[in-house]
Amino acid sequence: MALSAGERYVFYATIRNRSELSQCNPGGDAAVCDLAAVASLDLTTGASSQTVLPQGCGYPVLHAGSANMVVAACTNMGYVQEMDAQGHVLAHDDFGARALFGFVLSDGRLGAVLRDGTVPLRNQDQSVTRIDTLQTRGAVVSPTDQTFDLGNNRLLIPYTFGNVVGSPVGFVVVNVVTQRVEHRVAPTTAVSVVPRGSSQLLLLSRGAIHTYDLGTASTAEVAYHPVTNQTAAEVLVP
Image 1: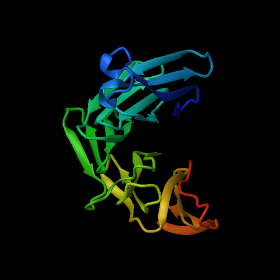
Image 2: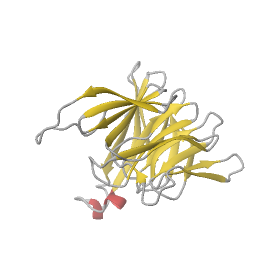
Image 3: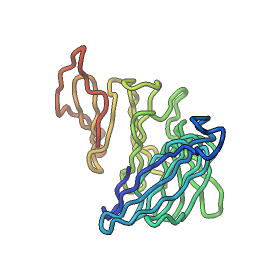
């Protein structure tokens, strides 16, 4: 789910089974039978719309863009689509690999964050610029932590060497215009990371919450939470 920049529209993903197909009734292969779409709801008038995504999309990740736009990334493929609240498709691209996050730069370029940490950008001349953000063998974008747009062309990309909740999480902050990785923190004890405004991050470990200052690259403990065998916080919610 995503809220538009002006807070008038809510965007959310839907998936329906194509029960009209004999091979999908009941159940069936999700790649053939599941049809994903992005729905929008006008919180002022109650009007709604829906835009269907390509077959095989998987469950889309939504990111509110500028004004009343939303960008959907298909997690089973490299397809990224920008659309408005009325369901009009403004731009789309297929970057050829699993997309976990989609975005549009102020100059109109469409981009994505792929599973392996690559950030491809479609240029005005239709060439593709690819930024290798992780630069570490075996590292992948975290399957449980969300990529965030920090503003000023910067993305926060959590990454890990595991595929389960609770695996240590590191992160990179990359400027996609300058193609420069501004911050890189390897996975150690943190298990979740979220932004706190545009200048700080919150890091959750098993026992404490720390801040990471993007200006000074320094950390400080802000909260302690006891860990027992029965209860332990495993993810931060922005």
